[in-house]
Amino acid sequence: MNILVRSLMFLLTTGTAVPALAGPLSDGEKMAIQADIDRGTQALSKNALQIWNYAELGFQESKSSNLLQQQLKAAGFKVEAGVAGMPTAFIASFRTGDGPIIGLLAEFDALPGLSQAAEPERKPAAGVANGHGCGHNLFGAASVAAAIATKDWMVAHGIKGELRLYGAPAEEGGSGKVFLVRAGLTKDVSAMLHWHPGDRYSASQGHALANISGKFRFHGIAAHAAAAPERGRSALDGVEALDMMVNMMREHVPQETRIHYVITDGGKAPNVVPDTAEVYYYVRHPDQKIVAEIMGRVKKAAEGAALGTGTTVEFNQVGGTFDLLPNDVLGHVMYDNLKSVALPDYSSAEKDFIGKIQASFPKGIRMGDGTVAPYTSGEITPASTDVGDVSYTTPTAGMAAATWAAGTPPHSWQAVAASGTSVGVKGAVVAAKTLALTAAELFQSPDILARAKEELDRRRGADFEYRSLLGDKAPSLDYRKAPSQN
Image 1 (cartoon, helix red, strand yellow):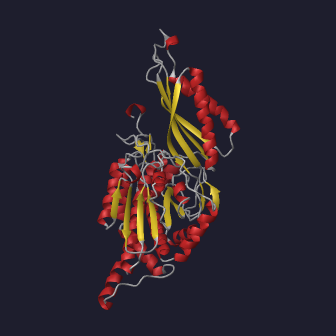
Image 2: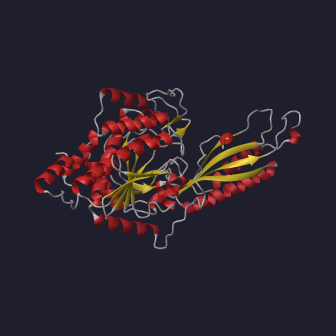
Image 3: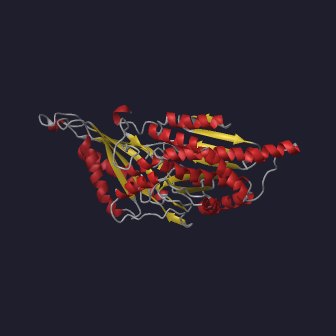
């Protein structure tokens, strides 16, 4: 029976509200919460596919953010927009009284240069330059669906506490959540839950790579490249000299390090010595202290490149994120709830779509079996996320859902395609159910929350004091705009 209907019947027959539940959810309550999400699947799908169509870049997600905000307001949440200096960030809260504060994270930014139609062959979408190659359109929509279902459950059972959904922009490089943490907006949360699209189901808790990113902008002197080359000083030479030195540096950094770059401005015409040029760098390592040291060496290389080419250089840091801190207490709760959710069946058309996607992969790519992966802890994922800063300041757990064909790499056209179809939505529904079940269980499990906090304190150390890798820098709201637009 629907939990809202059952609660109304209880109220009418007894004159009192349904008493708060205690302990883990019963099978009946789990079924009821999942049924509520099933009934909201149409709204989840509509939101996810609309955001997929918007394909807005970091800190530019005005329509995507507003869409999710409006749905939460309609569901009874109080929404505060434009938090922590980010116009597209928001916090949606529903409070019933004193009690635990459970948080959910939602993302909605796309990636540049990944335009793709929702088709199983490489085909850029008409009139769209960007794409949801990490499935954040699904992420935000499913987290909102989970929040609404959890809120309805709280009302039905008189649960005391506060549910918060954090609309977090610019995860892809802009470090949106870092600014939320730095502003103290997450420090009172009892437990934070998140998920991510992927090619398999898992609730394992592992580490990510800490990351510092930024743009080196060189300034030179323009001149005619043939008639007066001696009068010019090429800013592009500065960029290329930096890139060459960093590529030599790769032999002399810890092997877990990842350094990658893209030239975002290399001049406009070969016959004009470019007076400005820019290169955008990421440096990653499992330890944020080592990341800072390596980026310091890159900065020194930039100074040398400028000196050697007769140019000047400035560095604009864009992002800076901690590694991810696992929390096994919360992770096991999430894993048990994921295992209790029925995984989707696919139609013949969806199976055909998945098969065609997989046919585009190189031979030898490992494919998953579509089941929930066994629980593990502590493995290092070679990627970065601004959830890392959250995980160092409040107990945090996440999961992955199979929204793409097995074997699909993130940031690929195949991921964009699946994120815009019912294949992606079906995986997102599993994530929404798992998040809602986990949040509901945590609301009535003070012992679990206490143990999760103890684990956080133990893992980060007694003398831990949060200091953002971004220092006091304001959000780089224009980081996705072309240099000429900044």
